[in-house]
Image 1 (cartoon, rainbow, N blue to C red):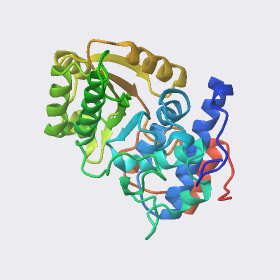
Image 2: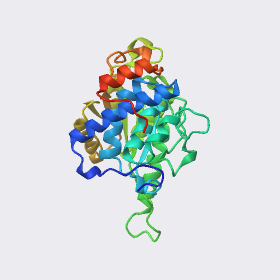
Image 3: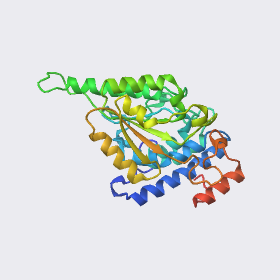
Image 4: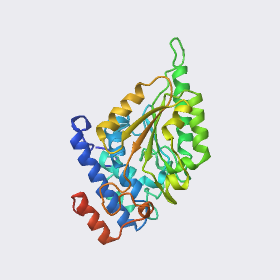
Amino acid sequence: MPRSGEKEPDVSAMTIRDLEKTANKIREDIILMLEAAGSGHAAGSLGMADVFTALYFGIARITPKMRAHASRDRVILSNAHICPALYATLAARGFIHRRELFTLRKIGSRLQGHPNNHFQPDLPIETCGGPLGQGISQAVGFALASRMNARTNAPGSPKKALPTWHTWCLCSDGELDEGQSWEAILLAGKMNLREMTVFLDRNNIQIGGVTEDVMPLEPLADKFRAFNWSVIDIDGHSIREIIAAAKKARAIAENPTVIICHTIPGKGVPYMENSVEWHGKAPTREEALSAIRSLGGCITHD
C-alpha cells in the first residue's frame, strides 16, 4: 500500500482496453477537479489523458513504491497548466488518494494550479512548473546528469555505481513559440541526448488561438530532424501507438527523440473538443454533468 495513495494497481495484468478505460476515468476526474476548483485548464488536460496513462502505466520506470528511488525515470511536465491530467493519473496509479484531487488549487493543497516539487518524495514531481518553454531545458539537464553517472560507471571504475534513468518530457506545441525551447532542442541535438524523449502535444491550439495563426510551426517534424532529433508521429489517443513509440525511442542510440502526439483538445467532451475557448476554462456544475455523461460516467467524489 503506497504511503499516501490508494492500492497500487497490478499494471502487469492490464490490457490496452484496461488502459483505455483508465484514461477515460482520468478524464472524468479532470472534469470533476476543475468543476470543484472553479478554474483551471480543461482542453489540454483532457487531450493528454491517453499519453499520461500510457506513460505512468506502461512506459516510465516509476511506481508508488519507488517514487523517491534514485534510478526512477524522470518525468518533466513543461506545459504545467495541464497538471489536472498529471494529478488524476497519479491518483489512478496509486501515488495519492483520489479524494485529494478535489483540493485542486485550494489554499494549503499539495495540488496547486502548477506542479511544485517541494513535496517530493510524497509526490513524484521533479520540478516546479509555470513559465512555458522551460521544460525541455530542465529535461536536458536531467538527461545530461544521467549520462554523467553512466560514464562514471564505466567498466573498471573504482567508484560505487551511480543511478541512471531515462527522462520523459511532456510539452505543448504553443510553448514552442518560446525561444528557450529551441535553445534546448539545439543543445539536446548537439549532445546526441538519447537519454531523453519529448512527448509533444500537437493539439493546434494555444491561449491566443490556433497555433498556425499565432505563430506557424509547420513543418514541425522537419525542424526537429534538422536539429538532429529522431521524430515519431503518432495518434496521441492510441495507447498502443504511444507505448510502441516510447519503446522505439528508448532503443534509438543516436540522438534524442520527439514523439509528436496528434491530439484533440477537450477529447471526449463534444462541446469542448477543438475549442480554443476551453484552453483555460473550468466547467460549471451543469457543464460538468454534461461532460461526465459524454464520458459515460457518473459524478462521485468518493
